[in-house]
Image (tube, rainbow, N blue to C red):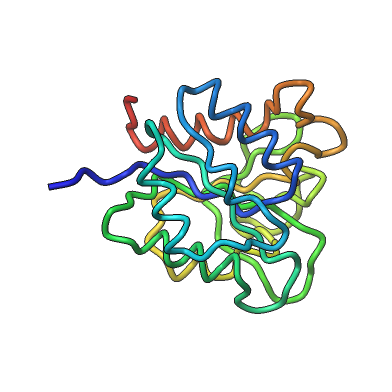
Length: 189
């Protein structure tokens, strides 16, 4: 019987996110599916699962992006497929805030603001704490509440957050989110 691949899903897929997640994956000894980046997501869920299965080791970081599309876009469709696949174990999700205030939000377990502080409140795309407890607004997060995700960590815009998560600085907020998910999941690598 094949073992399930250990995966962290990330609701961002632009170039900033790709560079940051590649860096973090290398730092933690995991892998990033760089081909999953795109704004919006261009690969299907099935194509992404095949790439995950080929990854050299766990944990595998995977990007999904709806590019601001209201409702279920390509990123959310692919994310749902991957999250529900029988050969995938989702350790957690990094839910990325966006500018949207339309209707798309998700419940979060915890957020990490741009100063690296854990908070029960959501954060905005700049990583600044918002007023809503347990809620984060984003453009690829609407489907998360319907999935069985053990931990959802809210963050601002990966690789950005007014320079606080810059790739050149080692993307410290993204790295903290990944490490939090690994710790809470009991992943021993």
